[in-house]
Length: 253
View 1 (tube, rainbow, N blue to C red):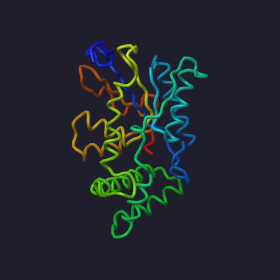
View 2: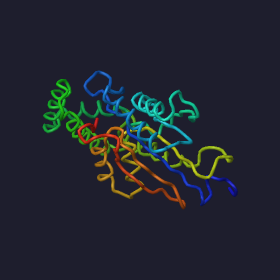
View 3: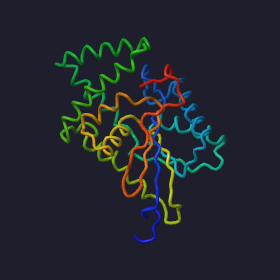
């Protein structure tokens, strides 16, 4: 392994994770940005451009809302795409399958009074596009995650939580991708979702699972999360940063 730049102790990998913009939770297809989400994506891209950010690699997790967010960011960083690296898909940055949400929700609606009441509130808030819909969605998701995690590998209808966790944590090997001719320091931008951000942050900080998953409720759309790999370990530099959005324009869905 001698002489391979990305394994050198002097090499530094910076990984910037950005959560996608606001998704269309009030419509039939959650996996697309709202008008607000598109504007949030343009704003974070503009902020990165103004502050001189340049990236060696660009990733998203393969979801439409992530792809749309990254496209808007790239347009702000370099209109027309001149000089930008090719966009790649890395499945570690994909959120858990939405089928999980539906499967577990259907099971909890029978015999779980608190969840049933909350689900009715969610339908009301979603159809009215109420201001509290994001908070209700996060509370619902908290119940769903708890049941999904408890099922372990016994959950076979879709991706299990242990499989999701293993898939996401493979992102930490991203520092070793590439070719021996690459420079020692690498700056990577990846557009992802709340689940991967939470798992990666919790793992790096050594949090227990409950506190790791609790982070998910607080992760704002187009928030910036900064990680650095240096001296053979990952470190968290910044979490849930939204300098590009006024407080009244921050959303959670």
